[in-house]
Image 1 (cartoon, rainbow, N blue to C red):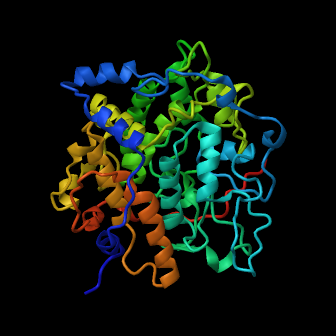
Image 2 (image 1 turned 90 degrees about the vertical axis):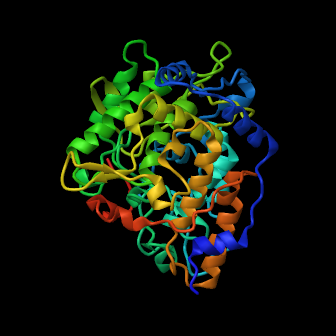
Length: 458
């Protein structure tokens, strides 16, 4: 009997619970109730820039993010990779992700890793995003592990924050599960998805979903023009607008379970929760227009913006969220559930079937054999969402995609250490079969752009 990698991982059954404070946070979240759409809207609008639960503390020494010395801003050199995520680009430009690539030994002796900045590792992702933004270990490790498995090199434990590593540097060792490693710039429907806050839908821009579209950025920027403040609720409304625009303009619009249903809306929340400045007067944070533009590499005044390619930066005199209140997986699921409750049109799983404005949805119950339902993603009981996403990440790893024992072992290690544990001690329903054939009716499902390393030059 041939078992998929998903079945192998399920049979192995290895997991380690997250720390008690994480599980306690989830328990507190699950105690909340939303009796109506009106309550959901009120809750969405009442959130601080630390999310539904205020940060409440400020420690200037601990939260200050250096932009001088070893962390002084440096424009990326001509051989350095940058990609679609402004936070990753800014972290690399300030050396919070190693400017020289962040590799750790051992490596194949024939591989020259000297000039591959923009290709990073899981430990560096965790330390860099924690120091620069206050992202939790379990969230940054989960995202890095998924990127390594699906878009990177499980044997070396590396992944690219942009496009493919330069030709000739890593060669065949960059081969990932789905072919040659494309990095997250060309990870459409896998890591990157439609309806980005500032990037084009890939199909509408010849496969380029990593370059900023200043018009799309201006749409998000407009949500804070009245008082020069940007909020989770304002961005949730902008996300709804962009979902509607994608359905109306992109015949290949497709909302994949991970990249578009989860990552795309969560990215909006990341901007507020991770890019807001903090102070003693406003410990829960505030995001103004100048800070928003700096993190996205944008100059000029609304609406006449200019994007400085690959030049995202951390503002001077900027204080991140406190390490005692990191932004983690339960925060992400709760913010997402509130957005879905308050603005139901933002929860999409499906796509256009025959041109624009032909959206058809798929329920999770159909693709998981009734184990999960789309309503689980609307539920503030974040264990439902955690259980589903922990399993779907394992389920989408293709059968037979890792024939080498070393690669299979490396993938299992990543799954068991960083993906399975997001379910903590929850009693999760087990997906016996994840039926992706239901997506075949969507033209955008199999759209896979490829490209060169995303090395931006003025």
